[in-house]
Image (cartoon, rainbow, N blue to C red):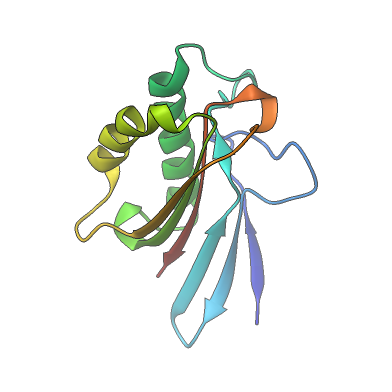
Length: 131
């Protein structure tokens, strides 16, 4: 198994001992990409964007798109998403925005409410993609 760290300046730098994503070799031509959970951090300021669930969800999706692109993938390659919401009442807003970026058929997904997210964020998402 070969592990390759994925990093792009178009998404927030890791704020701890982790990679933005890891790509693992999977067979002769394939790769599996595991992203770290992304929150609504602006990569330039490393602060949560203002505007609540809508702004944060858009930023998270932008961050994940940048990471996927750096890995040579896109949303069409995503097979699993795990969503963390600080308030399950934000699910409807989140779901509409998320639905705008995922490809058909949409990936399998889990969505859970959590007590706290890093830096006081509203939403976090991690992905698994296959190439």
